[in-house]
Amino acid sequence: MRIEAVELRIIALPLVTPFVAAHGTVTTRTAVIIRCLGPDQEGWGECAALPEPTYSAEYVDGAFLTLQEILVPRLLDTDGNVEATDLTELFADVTGHPMARAAVELALLDAEGRQRSLSLARMLAPRPPGPASAVTAGVALGLMESPEALATEAVTRVAEGYRRLKIKIEPGRDIDHARAVRSAIGPEIELSVDANGAYRLDDARHLAELDDLGLAYIEQPLPADDLLDHAELARRLSTPICLDESLTSASVTREALDMGACSVVCVKAPRYGSWLEAAAVLDHCAGLGIDAWAGGMLDCGLGRAANIALAAHPGASLTGDIAATARFFSEDITQPVVVDPTTASIAVPGRAGLGVDVDLDAVDRLTIRRDTVRR
Ligand code: MG
Image 1: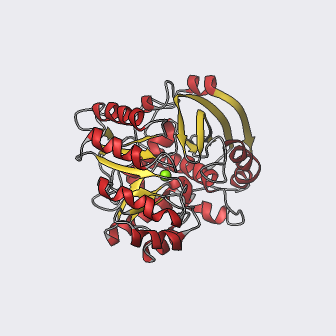
Image 2: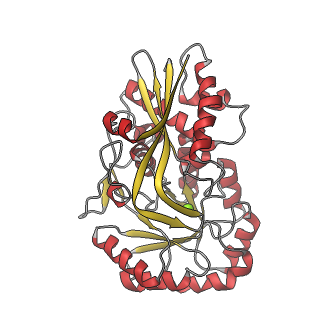
């Protein structure tokens, strides 16, 4: 699209309940959203960065500045049309900031999809068999004070229709919590745990106590940089290891798989800095028969729609983190994502681009900071 101006906003959505993980607590989900405006075209994107730099180095205010001062001026500095595939070259001199980059790419993909009457799901999975029309809903449960409270929450989510639960764990809130959930929901429901890097290789014997719980995987047990230690841990556990924070590019993902650091892949486009690269990782995993799934980041409506499109990719073989909007927010900037309780599934938007309607009144009401950068 030919971009005339780019609108950047920070919106603030209060969470229904605070979300607690080993990397920190989120009570209000602030997020950067981006809207690229052309003469007869527009495209929306959302930046996955959390309010504070806890999951990774990026955070909301930093991402806003990166977009405002670095990335968007490069977009506007081009003469003709800019397409999503141009961004690698356009941002070639910028190090890091994958989530901010992915937000720009998402806005361009949305615009291109609208122009070509293609859904984002179709753009990310262009080859046969193409994207699924619905994805299975999965929910991530934050850390809770007691195993009993977590088990009660888990039972509630299963009653809502969820067939895959992931629970956050950290030292002191792990084995007992996972065991309580497993015994409360029974053996049929897919269960996994996510440590967000809170353990060390020395904890291998302790983590092995998870092995009799029939977990689908343990996600990111060790810090992001510890690929070799993950490979060693994988040899000591029977529970499969899934990596999230460690997988910062397609090449790192290939290396992690090659060295046995993981046998399951969490694909997060914002972590890779690109929705197209995330789709390529899913292609790679499918080619190797490796299980993969699309992760989430407490996403608002735009990011959630994009994740659903990615989760519809045929390479996303396991259920991801995508839950109903109401699980997190009482208000959003798009129509809410709902889970069909009879099939435990979420419909994949089939309309062009992101396939959601942005509620401009809600955007205005929820905006706490804005700027429009013009050509
Ligand atoms: Mg994770």
